Length: 211
Image (cartoon, rainbow, N blue to C red):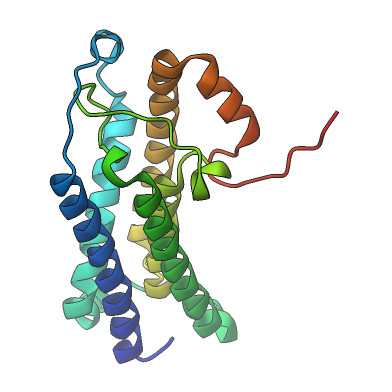
């Protein structure tokens, strides 16, 4: 295991850039706030599935507990045994940090591409546009991908078995949430969204071979 001071430093760096990304998009959205009423979306909106709600809620818990480890890592370690991979443990933790950095880069690219069109959840009263440029030209859900990378990275850094369970639940929930959003976007954009979907990956891009 890496010394706790290095683990804390990894967490601090990860959350610093995560906080920057969140602050950026909130301030940008507030500055460029535009609203349009879409009856079509409002009529088709349904309550998110229970597991999707649980997934998003679990993701928030996961990130909160990860942040708390900055201050209480030793205390948590007294009650929760850490997963170990022998001589590979430290390498696994470093790989986890690269995932956290990758998640921050992905979130940065996604937020800067969306700009004023960022909205969560899709509520039908905000200006909507099908953004297909930049990172969205390759994958449809880079923001959810960034949260998956964050969570996986923090888990590999902390090697906490309880947080591993939370990660699995949050991953399933984010996947269901992404599928729900795709349904809504298809109802709003129709064939334009279907063509976009055919050319992109959900979380990861795979080059489509021409027939």
